[in-house]
Length: 269
Ligand code: BTN
Image (cartoon, rainbow, N blue to C red; front, side, top):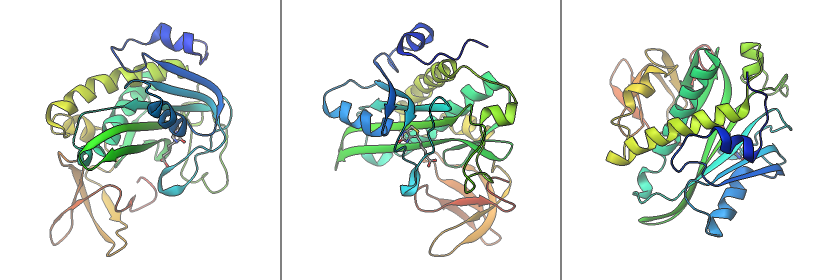
């Protein structure tokens, strides 16, 4: 393994991308790399700017939750994008990012890396990465999108609340990894998949790759729809990123954001 140095220079020396991460802002401590990336977007930083931090003091998770971000333990990064796409299509970029992280981690760690729909990355049924996408837009124009990615790399323990569902690459693979390498490979995959996404503004071209890594594929899932929870068998994603769930009565399409999906036997099983 390369030494785990996470600096701007180290990242620049191994990045093999056209535009993703061409501008890198590397910080020791920040409240949230997403918040920082949004500030930079307002200041005119270009699409492709990458914000990376060693530590976050107010890391943000989905659904208003926080994200544990202790110093040096993980990857806390945000990619700034300014795509000329329909704002209604932007949420699919989270799935593009999940696919890119999963591909990069599978290649580097050789572990059985899977995606739990829509955008958690799991190893051995435990979450090792989360993605938070935020957008500033008008009705039909996107000002900017920030895609924040948190990967648990060297964490040795988690809070009591997270312990049953969260883990790190160190805990699952019993090895340490070079964070800069993970970031570089993720951005490489993201550039490729993003170009495919832009051709159709949907996941038509990527769905097969995504489904191949979907932990829920052909498994029973419980859809925690606040209106009416139901159970069924997951059958992959549609080109719009919805999860296809076959119940005894019918085929249902589940939109991300609306509901939470659980394995029948736990978080991702
Ligand atoms: C989730 O709840 O699953 C999403 C977690 C996203 C965490 C990352 S860490 C880097 C970026 N900055 C943040 O404040 N959040 C995201």
